[in-house]
Image (cartoon, rainbow, N blue to C red; front, side):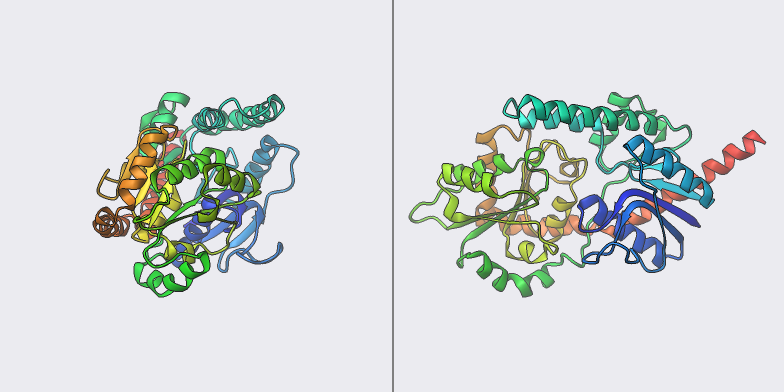
Length: 395
């Protein structure tokens, strides 16, 4: 089958969506598909621009455009010339058979982003954010209206957003939750790195290391995570020590100021962006993700695969895959500081963590990338059949 995979950036270092797309592309090539990657940018992890993004796949660069709508039009022209059997778009163009916006609903994302920011951001920033949102929202409206295309939602939450906020016919929606690389994040591999990784973070034997991650700190609840750590795991005589580690791009100064104000600066680390998260998962004892919006958090699934109990929220589609108080804790509202801190304290207790770690790993095995990609391939096959049926009907 000739497959065109369309996205903005084919760069595994850019974020979760791009990392997932790279793994899907590899899987398609291994399984004998003729893959064409269509992107505005593309590179290998750790390589400069201009390198071949993926062995075994053809790469087509979308010409520069002055706006997202212009990029979408350019992508549509490009894929139109490819003659692919199925076009799988991750949020870039307007010509496809399968549309899978890993970022979820722009409407839901914007609403939750505004809620996460509260009234603190200045008006100028709000205006800029709104202008960007309106452009993306116009593109999204066109994408979700493409006739005949299947829309892949990565969670029931996202499917409901597409249906209720955007009017997408439920008959067009297919729910395919994300998966995790259970081999890369295997407890056996992590155990070999654990001692050295914890030493680099300054964690003593017996310390509980709380890991969090996210590039969009406001939306992913970085401040809320810090507050929960300070309240839920205070430093006190007779208690196990605890350390907080937050990964993600951005200036660490505001986080350090927040940690200092909470009195936990000496117990916090902010390494920033790291190309390899495995050592940090190896060092950690649990994962904290108090997000305001996440269609189906890939990093949460990776934490589960690493046998880390997770504290997350109902606004994370990945929480649908978890059982509260079995795989960790699921909090209704990230802004509920007291409940979030209590959930963190509960999961940090060794008596909770031990069985939850085993349950987390068992859950992740059922949510592997292999099973995820096989389900995506089934959607591809369905899309090909639907296109053929439509062509027969038009003949």
